[in-house]
Image 1 (spheres, each protein chain N blue to C red):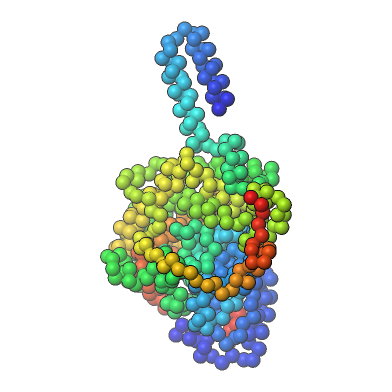
Image 2 (image 1 turned 45 degrees about the vertical axis):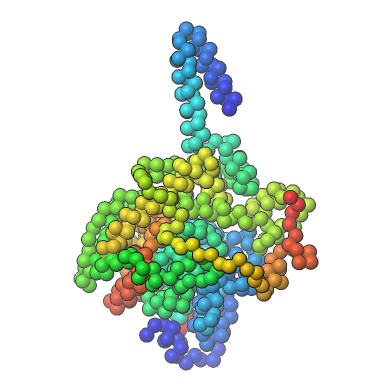
Amino acid sequence: MLHAVYIVYVTYKQVTALGNSILLFILSVIFIIFIFLFWGMVLMDEQEFERLLHICRIKLQDAEKERIKKDIESVLEYFDTIQQIDTGNIVEYYHPIDIDERLRQDSESQFNDINLLLANSKTHRFYIVGPKI
Amino acid sequence: MNSIEEFYSLEKKSGYAESLFNDLSDINSRLNAFLNITRISGQNYPFSVKDNICVKNVETTANSKILKSYLPPFNATVVERMLSKNFDFIGKTNMDEFGFGTFGLNSERTPRNPFNEDYVAGGSSSGAAIATAVLKYHIAIAESTGGSISAPSAFCGVVGFTPTYGAVSRHGLIDYANSLDKIGLMSRSAKDIRYVFDIIKGPDNYDSTCIDIEKRKMQSDEGKGAKNTIFIINQINDLLDESVKSHFSGLVSKLENMGFAIKTIDFNLLDKAIPTYYIISMAEASTNLARYTGFKYGLKNNEFSKDYNSFFTESRSNFGTEAKRRIILGTFVRGASVKSKYYSKALKVRGLLIAKMKEILRQGFILSPTMPIMTPKIDDANSLTPVQNYGLDILTIPPNLSGFPHVSFPYDYDKGLPMGAQLISDHFEDYSLLDFVENWENSFKYQFKYNLGSI
């Protein structure tokens, strides 16, 4: 964001130095903001990549990070190709076929192999032990 | 007679089961079909289960280190139904981690093609296809999200059947992408598949997305496609290797001679199915894999003194590179600022693809080679970039993305390696595919290098 403020400031100095109108200045600001937003939507910059890694709770070694980041840029360019398709009034297809809404009774049931279930975790009495939150 | 009936009609010599176990263990050390092998009685017909489907008290990991030593406390519905009909569970089959792959190479134990070990077996249900190609009497429970049954079936020369989305319960399946995952079958003949499909299909109280395909077929005007018309999509011509093109035209001629009407048709959206599929599948995978935190399933991180975020992040370093890549991309495409551009748009494109494909499938089948390339060598497949790799799924993704049933069947051999063709039908027309392949098998004999367990 500091980069954007700096670019706006430099543009302002240049425009005023040249004695151009305030309209030109406003147009320049709109143009820069548009480029900035568009850029942020299409490409994943370093900051965005680090933010994503944090959200995903994924930590990468340097070599793996470089490789995956490079791969992701090319995959996103590939993903962008669907923008050309006119989807008109088509709705979002969450399932490929219609699935009827089927609900079960909200009733209690007994799970018979509770010990097998707990065997997959570190336990204390009949509790699963996890990290502190 | 199918091979299940044949198996029960034959008298087994004493030591049959022990000898089968030893032979299978021996060949498995080279081909890596199974992640674990169970001793069977020899009296019942054996079935294998892909490692992302739960078998009670048998290690089930979706071939990921993050699920290492996970012992499910229950059987998947499909496993329960097989056991209830006295089939014998023979082992968990190798796969790409969580199903993320086309060649089986996202596995620490590289699956090898049973016809030539320098070549890939295909993925992600690699082990299921290898097991089917080496065992004389056996059926594989496999799973497909974007082509994981068709691709390995083609490379290993077996029949791979992916039913209509929702036809088989997914209770007990380790989810990759919920709107795409389908449990299916691999075998050496369509007759065996028909027999077992009758057992495993149908509604299940544990899976609200599971449907009755026969009921749905009767209720709608879907699935009325002409059974003697086959459409070839014009756009595939530019995608095929010359060698594949030449073999495939031979198949088309044979089918014409068998009395099928062959027609060509345009489908301009074909190449858009791949990005659409990967956006949806990665978005869904990134949410499904969020449950692996290092203390509830499998792998145990006992560093409980660490705060939750550090604990979680450290545990998730056990994902493989492809899984990490898909989690990151899937999280990105769901982000608030780009969701309408990627995820929502992909869901709409899926709707468009289904409508366009349905227009064709109401008039007949769609046929293509299963894969656009000849079986690659393991080293060559390893050097592909992700985009090159994803691009090779172009023929298997459209039916998977759209939930149409499809079957891959062997139709020719080149330099000793099998080649597969893929037939697609309309929703709920699963049995018409099996009818077609049964008919094909009357005139074409499949070849196998191994026949372990012959009686």
